Image 1: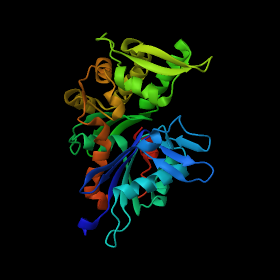
Image 2: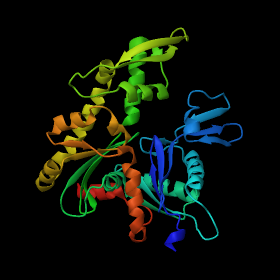
Image 3: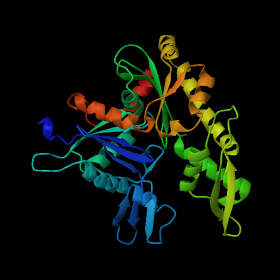
Image 4: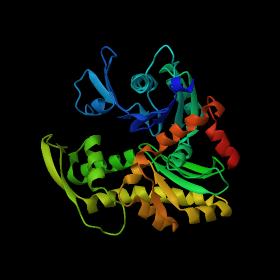
Length: 346
């Protein structure tokens, strides 16, 4: 009957939703954005089409991110977004029941937030829901061997949260979740442009600046620049700016150092034996935010430990969720009480 399963692995991210279908691979990779008609409540677009509407909608239409800082902020819109994406990911027939779903959650979530994720997935059409910690999924997706007693460290920088975790024996020995990630970099760029130049830019433009010229390493590398069009805060008229990578790097470096400081904090709470393993194995970076230029160098310089960017870092978590589908029959259904486990470890 495994031939007819519709089991799904879901990376329910603040910026993007990725869905892995058992036996097929990644079948959905869409921005976590919903566009809805406020008058009728009708969903107009989900994913990339909805993201293109951000900041461009008429009065009766709102385009929004239903997740903030790694957790659900708008339950109804999250359910409706997942309904659309589940339909895209599955092929329903008489022989296939509703899908069982493995969803990753940040290591900083509370039990209430866990239940919110589970309820949203059930309402969206899942038959059963299983949770997995994001750094654990990221480690599996990065092909780290975490089955034995050898320690590994993963720093997963997503859109809303950064998860730092020490992994061993198929579990999390130490972890921390920081609400500084890809979206924080975008917001810092937008604030800087407004304060220094009096120009207002949207989230999409800020993200574009980060991707094209954002770098955080302290050594001054070859400068790049780009032309940005925004709105003058005083006159309301369009205004063009030329921004360079050194200026944007100064803005982003403080946030990158905070992530590096959190890595050090987790290492300080980790047993000497596991720290020695990590020193030998290195630190692995996953998540879309880890692709920011120079991030690995900042962490490596702060910790003195080799830091490596995983292959296809933005997809590591969903690949890990996909791998977990092979033992879904042995997973615990429902909340996994991450916060309580973390308190007991502490």
